[in-house]
Image (cartoon, rainbow, N blue to C red; front, side, top):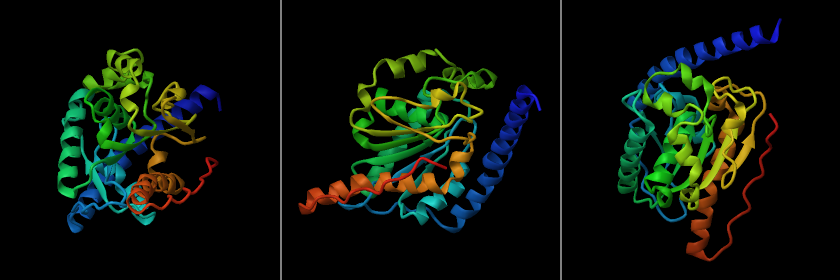
Length: 265
């Protein structure tokens, strides 16, 4: 099969799976699940992991995290919070304002001084705008991005609304984020990217670079990040690290060495 035809078929399959299964079916499963299990933020105390916010991407919803959230809970991350970014096609700046309100409300409800954010696709840019431009760095201990077009994606030319325009390579929003990374100084950033991400083109746009830490995951499609047990374990380990440091400061004991994780599939 010619390479262009194989790429087109793969991209079509990714679109169908991402929008029909991840965007729709999982949303209804998420609604049923959260309806049966009322999401009550857990009170935070020194030594606990900070609450973790799961933030979806372009044209999606909180249901994207139905499976990955379950994997995180199995890995020991119990204080999870979900946020749906509405209106769907609003600007990234507007989504960041909504994220800021959610962070402040979550901190007030739990008593936690900071939060962690795990973001997929556009959610990573929303998080960066909140951290870098709106001054959210002191509030965010850890930012993990999966398949985020940090340098833009040509696929954004096929999107609708302000947020799609802002994800096009060379957009003013991306230029501002890249122009001053000092706002990330207070936040640990892990950016996962793949060479087979059909919605982040060129694929290297998924890597943030310094001051973040890039983690290459070969042969993952754009939605595959949301189903990986290994990535859930890695995220859980990263979430525990600041908690161990907090506990060490309170007790005077050194934190345990975090587990090492492999990047091989």
